[in-house]
Length: 191
Image (cartoon, rainbow, N blue to C red; front, side, top):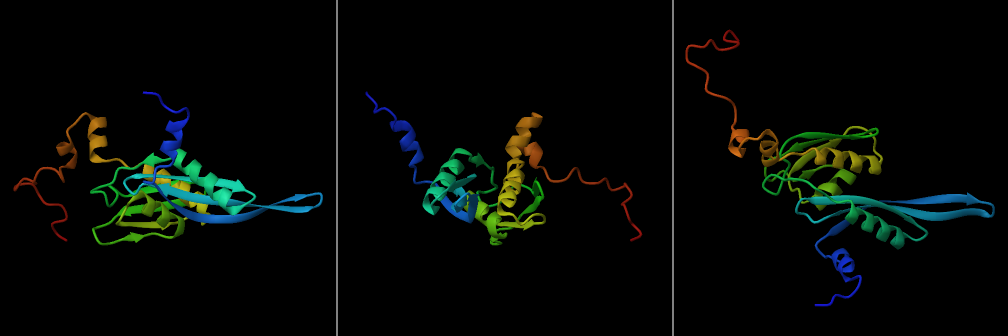
């Protein structure tokens, strides 16, 4: 079976499963001898809404070309994030990049995405349905997205933790220890 040369890469790039979200567009200028030359910088988040997300930035003389470049870069830099029940994070986590700091917390079903601006775009493209997040540091969208992805890459599922420790998933998911003995004194009994 003969293949057309160069077909594989094009087929892979044109996958309709990815959705993208334009987060920021910025007009930039370069001062030259005759005046100023204007260009555009775009920040795009791409995801499959099933646990994969990536971001990219692109610069060009025209807006559509900058968005296209950013989208291509985002597709190349995608990361996989484990989700609990396909809707929220496994555990609370913090992320940091430069002066950008973010806090992300798991949430019960029906909470929705409580996050601002660039963080919301990342969660929507990731496929998270319930999360509470707060940006504490820089309001720069580039740093916020990088900090969010930093926190998400630290996310670990019980299966990953069990594999790392050489235990079973059931051992990891046990809540609390053994029941306290009846004759053991309770802490803060006077309170």
